[in-house]
Picture (cartoon, one colour):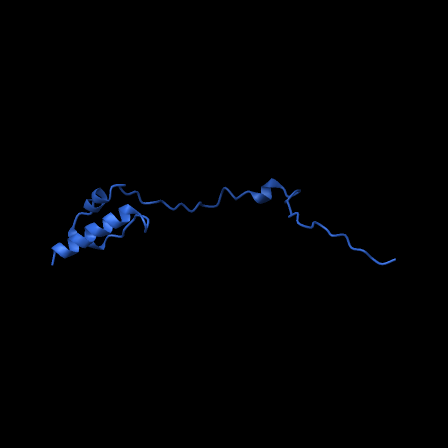
Length: 86
């Protein structure tokens, strides 16, 4: 008679059953990396005016998502400022 191998797990993934929960938990003594999001005003005009000088207004990074109306408004404010100072 020929040797037949069983198909094993087939499409079922390993479940991790039998692994102690202590091994899956993170170490509470390790420092947590905290990334603080910079808060900015939802109104682009107020956020733009929060910069004190015209130089910082022109070079300010646009914090709004790239395809949003607020992004376009903030960019327009910067463009108007550049054009007015010429």
